[in-house]
Image 1 (cartoon, one colour):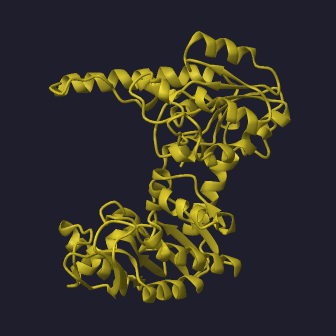
Image 2: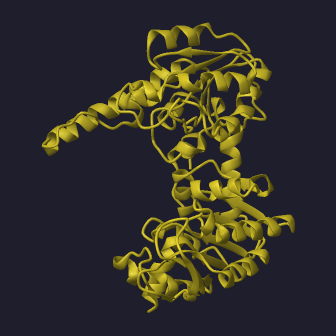
Image 3: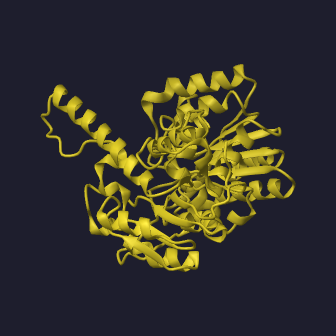
Amino acid sequence: MQTIDKFNFSGQKAFVRVDFNVPLDEKFNITDDTRIRAAIPTLKKILSDGGSVIIASHLGRPKGVEAKYSLQHILGHVSKLLGVPVEFADDCLGREAIEKSAALQAGQALMLENLRFYAAEEGKPRGLSEDAGEEEIAAAKKAEKANQKEMAKQLASYATVYVNDAFGTAHRAHASTAIIADYFDSDHKLFGYLMQNEIDAVEKVLENTVRPFTAIMGGSKVSSKIEIIENLLTKVNNLIIAGGMTYTFTKAMGGKIGNSIVEDDKLDLALSLIQKAKDNNVNLVLAVDAKAADSFSNDAHTQIVPAGEIPEGWEGLDIGPETEKKFAEVIEASKTILWNGPTGVFEFDNFAGGSKAVGLAILKATENGAFSLIGGGDSVACVNKFGIADKMSYVSTGGGALLEFIEGKVLPGIKAIRGY
């Protein structure tokens, strides 16, 4: 498989799929440019070799052409970070895109308008009526898949080499993330630095594990993390359950959780996961106390109570001090750490203590030689909030892509390049 370090881009036009789906405020200012900065090394490598770049991305989830989702809003910032003026084509499939791509010279850059302005990017038919029949739906899907191939073919025609540096969309079989690769031979399609780093980080954790291996899984629902948890139970030494799904496990074991968030239809599932952990000799670590509140508010009255003794009218919004110590002890003794999901409502400063304690324990373990992978939007937000992101071994830019990769799924964007 071709690699970016070994490839010489001199004289090449590179179609680079990036993930510039960044948050914008009401005035279209970028509020977090992490994803843009993460792709800059790949773009600079191509330009410094003497190649040219065609930058392609999506932004948001538009239903057709919507000005608020135009990549024009981020063009100036991309130009500033890249250090060269970036041209813009206001339609990724229009005449301007074709002509400007053809005119690109060495060292020049062009950004295409939002790929998702076209339904063909995602391969999903739009505009079907709610009462559409099965035959109509099937025909629409077939037509859109054909449109998707045509879109991928046209995008590929702009360039001589394809570079996928959009890990955040690697789990989608879209025109620009997977299908386009079919139009390049194996020597002319490769991962960018960001994509390769993401793959290396996950595979280091899951396949080249240094033990003890601890995973911290947070989040509000067991149902959203079930496949990840089941996969991890075959790989980890310790699995720490945190966040809102704590209370589903606690209730399943007979505890009282007051008004805490719970999935009553997943109590049996929680018990089965507890048994699976025992069967696999995995140390399943659950909270022993909680910081409970009398309302869902930063200013709520609080009390520390045993995890299974939360009073009626109160809800657990974070772990308690004894759980902080318990989690930290396990984490600090680990050599490989995966963190996905906070311990509580970290957006409220009064309920961020548990997540901060976990973050600091990971920091300490990392300083002592452990490999730490932080993934998922909320976990990344945590390490950024606590000012420790740069102290972690790797902070992933992927959300759904990372979770599906951890689940053990084959991601279309990865398979399109390396074949598996």
